[in-house]
Length: 401
Image (cartoon, rainbow, N blue to C red; front, side, top):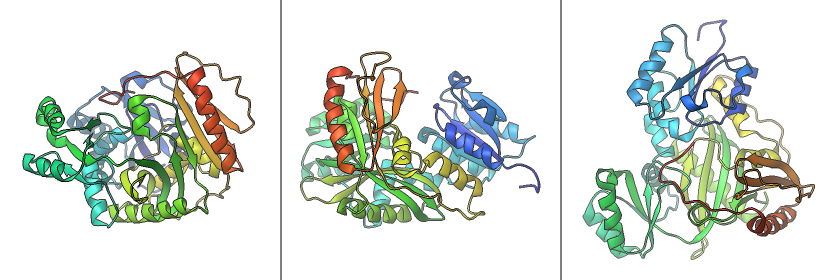
């Protein structure tokens, strides 16, 4: 970077998110650029913190993205490129490699986008994973299905939140779906279905060291909520509990094994009902969705978007120091609602930290010094939400913005 000029950071996002990341970069003194899709040109962005906004068509081919950013770089130096959404990560990694800009490259990003790659690498690192097989060689698939009891999960290698997943109960059902997939088959894996409780741990990492991590437990597993409907809940775990201690250790080993250098991560694990052990499910190098960043901030005071921006701008050249922590408990409850603007005024408990205002959704972020109080409110509100608001919709085969 040339001496005396502002650090220039290009934020790329196909979705409307990461506003706090942009604000933090600007507050640090960066020149901040945004590249988003055309329909979000006038979205809810902090325009006072943006020095320029560019748009791209949805599904712009990588080659077109490289041409566009390279053209801009003829007249303006770019120091960092960041994908604010998971679905832009691979293209941004390719951009970094093409322009020789520091940051996660294509090889490492596969461990945080490709479910097959991350499982194989985690298994090599000695971390438990459900049995799995690449949907590639049919003899291997037959051997897997003869050895691993059904049902199985057919999973896209590079999707999120249960999108595109199918539960398979018998071999002929798999062959039917593979016929439908055609040449897309190799972009899937087949995995053992393990009944269990699902957890997530959200981390801040600086120079390969986990400097902050909060472990949480989902209510109903997200796969069940997305495919069958229901009320989504998640809550922080007590810091001194055995579940938290186990998850913290597995998470550190996982991120070390995957070679993660700096930034934020969202990892998911399953505690099997059969043997009580934790199994790795997936990990992403991003802030978790479903208001998880608000959950973490309510419990700890740490805003994951803000810390990610500080790490990205410093890029290992400036010492990183985590802000002071507070230790409380928090939870999120969220439901698809029948009403366009659901009325939640009947919910008046003082633990409501934030009321989620989103079209056809009802939800809260809760905060309390008591873990038991959070759990009680989530259980009570889930029953009330089912009666007051709950609507269902089929899970999409592709992400929608």
